[in-house]
Length: 239
Image (cartoon, rainbow, N blue to C red; front, side, top):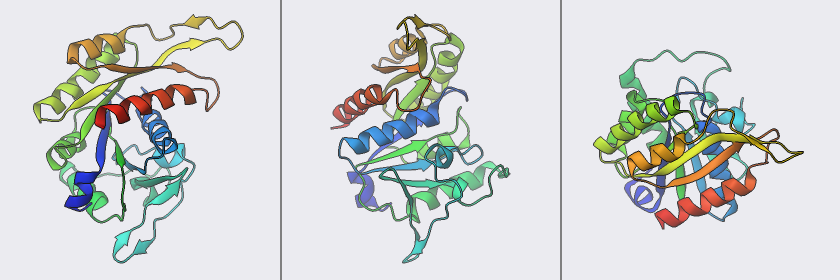
């Protein structure tokens, strides 16, 4: 992205302390919800080793075209998508050392024709590794959205990722608690499968709002209303 595009685009890095908390699912569904509000949205899958965005959006196996020397993002559900998953075979491991990750990030930002975007969501790999640091250093204006589950362990690990971002000057806009209980579709009783309160405690520790508590769902699309509310809150914070 050129400097003018970067200034006009809200960049949101979606982070978690550990894997398995549904960070990529949150990223994709938040992007779709923002698009449904009328915004122009892109998703950059920054998880070079464990990319999952193409599969989540049903575009695995696609290959970007080249136009005027730049890669053209894959379009899915109205979103512009770029991922390492478009360049390697499914289930093929990517074995690269840390310095190469920074080069890939710059290439995905500078050598991709993103066009005019209102929001670019970055699906970060879990933890505080090289890619998270590269994003913090290369895109200091990127805002951070932290995803955790209700478990105290997950929230504690997520806190470390958030504190690293804060030390590098990134603004944390809020916390999303995913898998916040399961509501029985028959009796409407809520069961806290993974405990309770981790997201609220993390938000209080960081001094940021708990933006959403997303329940476990049995069918795709059940959380549409929750994501619509989350998208509206994110848009309001960044407006």
